[in-house]
Each structure stands twice: as structure tokens, then as C-alpha cells.
Image (cartoon, rainbow, N blue to C red; front, side, top):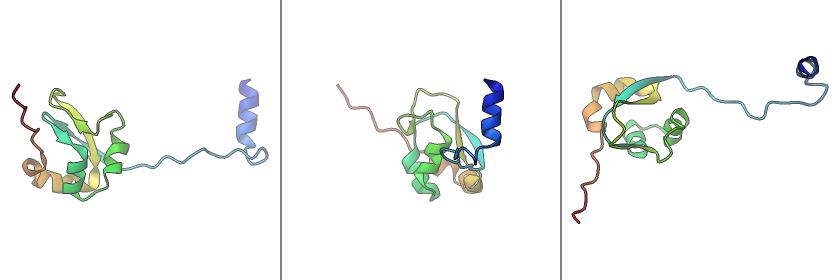
Length: 101
């Protein structure tokens, strides 16, 4: 089976085999988050597409870092790190206040 697979991959043009999609690479760096952070609002403040943050952080299903996720490592594009470093406090979005019961 291995020999057949290797042969077909080496002669992919003969069998009209092409990659399904080409994954894009975004150079990134990481930051540590200890409070609520909405990816859409962060992307807006950093003037980058929210899709880039979603692509770098596919494990976030709700597009937000929730309050209970302590010491969460978030990947951000490397190009916005200087802006993020200078404006770190203003980029954090506080959570909505809890409604009284």
C-alpha cells in the first residue's frame, strides 16, 4: 500500500491529483489573556480582519476569550504586536455586568 501511495503522489499530474486547498500562513505571536476578550472588538481596534484571529485561534468556538479561561494564550498577527503592546490596556474589553436576579 505504501509503495502504491508513493507512486501516485510522485506522478500526481498523470492522475490529475491536486491539493484540496492551500493553507495560508499568518506570521503570529502570542499574548496571555486573563480576562474577557471579544475577538471581533479586538480585531476592530487593531484594524485587522476578524477572520485572521479566527484562523489563528480555531479552538475558540464563541469568538471570545471567556472570563473563566485564566492564562489563556491567544495568537495574534505579528504585524499588530507593536500596536497591541502600546495600547494593551485600551484593547481589553470588560465583560458586561451581571444582571441581578
